Length: 241
Image (cartoon, rainbow, N blue to C red; front, side, top):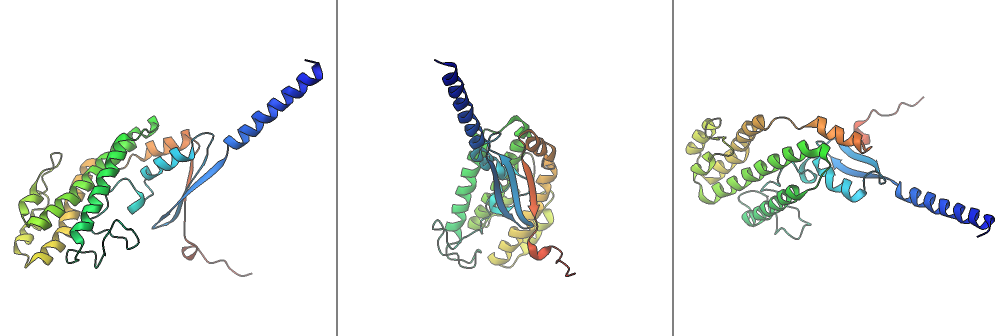
């Protein structure tokens, strides 16, 4: 091949490689709504793919509620526009479809836990994945236990141990109040709020804090930048000069 043709071919190859690199190195941003404002994760898809980042994002300590993998959906969750649920009603024990919708949430929590157990994550995230798995499993157990109590009204259900934790010890006062509660609605409210919070506080004291250092190490290793953007209404109003 003449030298000119070889140079042209080499230049064309370099151009193709450069264009491929430009396509591969595409910046991307994931955005989530939180109670504090929009939470964003900005990254380069040449370093970590968008699909992989989207799969790992629910491990973030800045996501809450439906977006997070740290807690299971509560029994009372019901979305009118979601066909998996029947008519939501008041979203409480007295609602006609409460138990049916509660089981939808338990099934979703169980599937989420199974997804988390199968998750393949970078090594920096190993402590976060283990923390999330334990946090989610505990949260799911809480919701399962409450539903069983609402079906049987047997207070012994609320005394069952979990990973060595005996809820009857720290929550004895709540269980005593439960015996005096006048009717199912009063018992439901006691368990939904006071027993849930008491047992949850006791377990999370054992679980410890979220491994923030591991999450931040993952962000640094993969060049991911996170930010929480406050809603405009919460920012200081601009001053007129």
